[in-house]
Image (cartoon, rainbow, N blue to C red; front, side, top):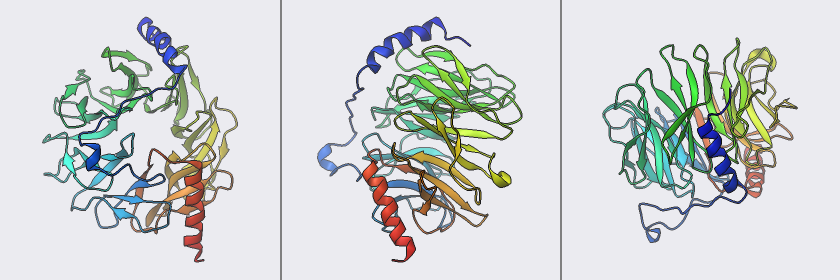
Length: 375
């Protein structure tokens, strides 16, 4: 499938910017003097239902007990860091049982409702400059994409097709494009791009009888990963915006899904059922799809992988049967999984602070090893 003339023009212009580092002026709804600073490197958000409903917790590399940031009798989830690590977006159904988008400081203070709608609002995503968000809402019928300034002002509807809805918004790292999934009446989805300046929509995939989803941007904003169920099982695909070419990266009699780029773009992690026992396991391959290798051993199911650095450290969730699930640190070289905190209920959705580093990842592994070895 070839890029449209419009998208080729965008690529030609954006490549000029890619030759240098992107920079943003980050603004905040509060004065800097009101907030002492960003969250410390290495701190990790995660969701747990240990108190009976889903709440948001903050854990650090020092081995201390996680701090609970939200506390109510409803569900809080889909938490994500602002690009500067000072604030957190999340979804909550604390007001009347309907899901809405909330905002808080990184210490859990000043929690407030941003989206304010009596129906469904969710899947919030920060713009790379931290000045606005995109989220999914049913306020105009089928699910549509909307944007808001981070102070809750300037609401804009971004999609308008009412066939079946839209979801899975994903900003390109340079902030110029938004990838999303457009659903059809068969509840299948194709991937589209929205130019956030020109408000121009471009279709990337065209598989109305199949499912395309989980778009993930390359660090340089020129490629998209996603999974697609065009055969019996899901496989990983890559779309190159520069050439307009789509490549299938995996092709085995197993389900391969949820691709995630490493920070330097050289590796791709994904989930697969190709391992022993048919349980979902973590695999890593090179960015061209070569050299896929199993990282976890198949003894238990894993999910929610996220890269900590470019030196082989990740976070993921490991299930303990049907009893509990732990957020764990992972060393790709050894395959060792170390729990972030004792398993109490089901933990999920780990999100490292934006300033995670090799030093932080190593400190986490060292301290957690000491903590759980009883030394």
